[in-house]
Length: 193
Image (cartoon, rainbow, N blue to C red; front, top):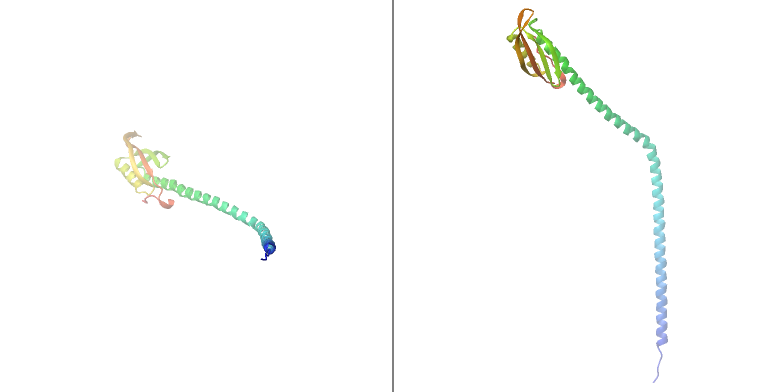
């Protein structure tokens, strides 16, 4: 019988396969490296473009920074002026009330003339305290009605009333407390006679 040694052929085939595998491995490695180089180049190119865009936007931002600061300053000025305007409106509406209150009291005292006299007038917050003398109870009641008919007073409370001798005449001494009202708009006036 004849024996053929096939081992060297198998060895050669295995070595050829190994060489092909190593060649394919190196070829794959070169392909992956090439792909990575292309991707890295693209990414570096994009990074460069983005850096250029950022530099341009920063330069443009610097152009507008003064305008932005001016807008911020104007907003602060507007806020400050709005507060001042509101304060002025409040003061204006409140400053009208004392003028109209005194006008209402003056009209009520002078109608009819020489029948009622005030000794003191004192305001404490939203309360006004009056003291004086009147010819009689009727004149005092008319005075209180005239005051409460005004939009600047909501209520009149007679705190004390007594007879007092003044210049040889018996007069009605009184102390009166009025509640002050600030009608809308601060305008209006007392009852006209």
